[in-house]
Image (cartoon, rainbow, N blue to C red; front, side, top):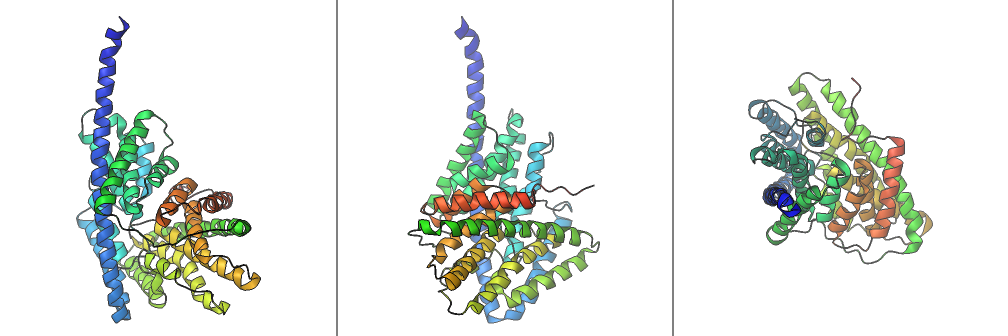
Length: 423
């Protein structure tokens, strides 16, 4: 008797679940294609322009101007003249009922993210990818019958799949959706996100996979634990510096009414910084790779250029975003953390002869600054472990990330995602 009553309901529920998981799998495929093609194209042209800069360094005074001007033209004539608000757009689509991510956000963030980075904007394609892939999830929930009530699940599936594809980091993709956007524990939500992640991961691994960094981490010593704690504290301060810098320059450039004055001023600032410190160009991953081959300096003055780059990166990133570039704080956080880690290790080695392993501090610093910047320690831990392609530093990274998150939150309880200006 009960079976005859329950059976139709269960059949309907099972059919709905299959539809959701099928949509999630399709989202995973498209998210991987968007993330992977954007990554490949960006790396190609960024490398090409950097090579051209090596032949003619004065070219840098034209590239950012070309990039920001092109973005402005596309935004004005093609993308409804609406600014891209990055992660906040995705958060609003989840929190506010009825507000969704329009389809044009996919090409808008794709092309604007590409143009920002390849022409020298000092940020990365991570946020552009996240918003574009989240928009795929929103679009599927709108277009497929009976899936509108699963919009949040499919949006999270899309953004998690995008992060997975970018870093070949499925656990980090899942944690990013969980920590930053929604902590839903419903079975359907978890199943949808996991399905999209695994689809994206497999597609990326077998067709697009390329290790971002070639780190050869082999060992760490428990005697270094106090210095990992110190690195976590310093990372917390640097995270807040990045957050406040982005918020300040966005507000500053937002007060400039003439778009062309804004673009020219911002382009000149970025061009000048990159002219003297080429590591500030684009994502900065090439700069991080160069750090791994720096040997122990005999003169501490050799660290001064590294200090300048580390403290200029928040400004370069903030100006990029303030002028209208597309991107966020993912890549800048990894960049700042790498420089902070190397500077910390070398300074301690120089003054106290500790024989710390600089590479370990580079990797741990990357995770710690990211944790403090986005207030997502679990995402940062698993993302950087995936980047390092091993979990040897899991415990030091865990310690540094938790401390950085705590310190950053105590100093300033907002991220660039959660801050809301006072009306």
